[in-house]
Length: 442
Image (cartoon, rainbow, N blue to C red; front, top):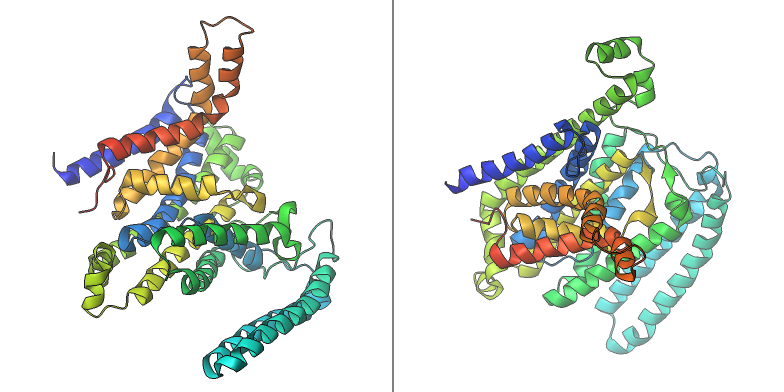
């Protein structure tokens, strides 16, 4: 069987798993619910977008980004700022002070850079620290009262600036822009580091971004969460479908109750939107990979010294691809928040949004866009199913043990950790028997 047929068979096998999940009778392996199957599909499609972003950085250029969670989180901020309605009175209470604080911060950094470049060494040693300290004090003097005033407006229901009330689909490219801007700042400071130090730097910066979202209530309510994020067109709300006589009649003609039919309709529409985005990204990334730019990036990845000798600006190209990959991660973050309908900064953890994404890319095949998509779908399916398979497996393993046994109690209590064990085991097996992934790079 040729490689193309093999790839088709792998994707067909993945599709078969989703079909069996929805169409089979409920048993120990499959849930027998189209609702569950479509839920796995939707998050899997978003995970595939996220895996493409990581693959652009690692598979194209060999950049190890250990702070993926930060770019996902900052992309998830976009639906809050774009699609949510404004908090009346919040901007007039502290918006001007907030804008002045950020202007002071930008001016401080610009002035410090200017002095550092043009002044003599003696002047720099004195002037730059004074500029930074003075600018920081001015920033805090403006920022503190402004945020306090914003958080005091409608504290119970909002307590933040709110958004612009625009269609939520517009927030998806805005999330990509937010992540790209953060990547530019990170790249300018960290891309000159060696690969292991780059991983440490991105890990720390990613956690800083998540920490800011958790603590700055004026921005996205912090741990209080933002609920009720609007849905994209043409996805309706289930209650609206259930109140439609025509929809109820069509559901009855198919043998479905209105509640189940409305849930399936909404999830199918989400699947269509996410699939469109994924297909567009695959087309763009494949074009980029086969272009002279893609060949240049792979040449830099494989031998930076030889590429530099041919006149390529390695740092500039690394910055470029780092920004592109992070923008795709930010896009996925905005899509995820739209699907969830709420912004929960406390849910961003490196295990889910960094480690798991890396497992998807490695298992699928780094450097291959189709491999990243397959790996994302497969790993998310297994990650989801391991939650139900773990207790079943532990119950089977301990079935012959005496009740009250300490070992039995420990094993049953450890069943919830089967997700971690499953992901680690899959990663080890793939690295041992197929180190280039299920669909290797050509």
